[in-house]
Length: 159
Image (cartoon, rainbow, N blue to C red; front, side):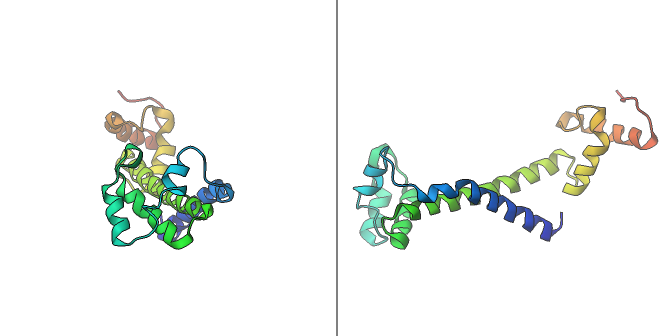
């Protein structure tokens, strides 16, 4: 796939993710654990030495999550206690994870198609799909032979 086409697909993945989670920006803090983690907790509110030390030593509510506390500290520094800022940070993380998922899935699908380029893999799958279990690793030998048979016009599945 060309770089411009890949960039368009990635932009589409990001756009779909943002559209799907956009209503969350209107949300408020929830009564589940936001009150203890965010609303009444002043330990994460900033990026000073005392805050960072707290973030790396606390086990508030039984969890040691310093990177999470750091991102929440950045959220606080940028947007204060406005819930939309925290939701926007989560929306950005969802979009980034969707792009990572796309990249991993693309590589796995290309590897499953015999290491061919993505466009070649799609064409190969279209040519050989009716013949049998071509997507599985154990069928690589058969898939190669079957694509040779489909090129010569045989409709018989070689054993």
